Length: 164
Image 1 (spheres, one colour):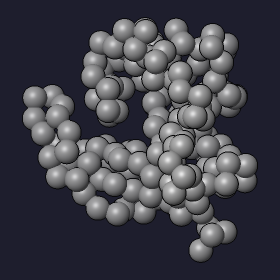
Image 2 (image 1 turned 90 degrees about the vertical axis):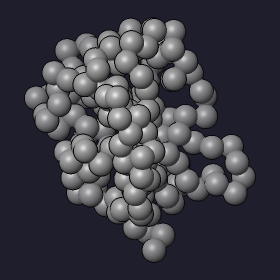
Image 3 (image 1 turned 180 degrees about the vertical axis):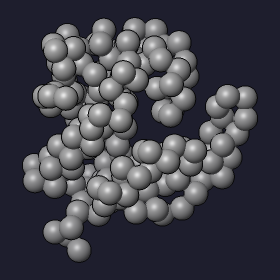
Image 4 (image 1 turned 135 degrees about the horizontal axis):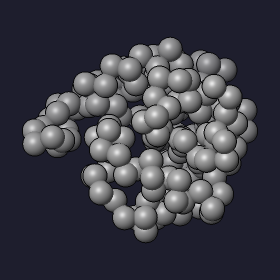
């Protein structure tokens, strides 16, 4: 499946809102189901964040965001968030977005550390992150609430190879 990776544009909000309208997407993010389009737009309005989108047939089908910080002592670090439209799960969209985000982090944004949290019951995402060089740092027990119960999250990070 041929898709392109590009930077986020203001006109992408409705496609992103559609992605976040699926409970199968929000259950694996920090968001709750039934987000308004205004709430989704606000998630992407911070000028300090860096977002790439995957586009297929003129429609945004996924995004990856590097959550940059203005904290002086943490500028070498970034959090990572990703979401893919359910129709495109398992088709390499997440992998291509993550690869491009890592390339930007390593070669253009001067980031040393990328960090993320992933639901322990999402083995597909965990496997992807491991393949891309993320390592487990720990488990946050009972750290999030979904489907009526508390669940654990893995904390994972990737240190830029040229830094080591």
